[in-house]
Length: 96
Image (cartoon, rainbow, N blue to C red; front, side, top):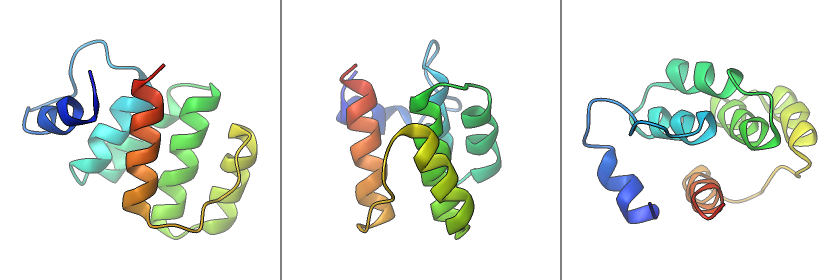
């Protein structure tokens, strides 16, 4: 799947089967369901989910919590838009 396919899947009722937790979290986020996105991110303890978790807290406006999760993910908090970060994370995770 690529970014175009991922965006197209947003028309469905649920994330595509077999999607890793970090991508499922971004799927729910794009659908406007922050709570489900957060649950999905919390269900995985890996660095990818930590990156998504950081993004979600940044989106929420909780910068101190976001900073913690960026550190756990081994990343720095970006200065760009949330939309740009969402796309960058999705693109990076789909390429793995």
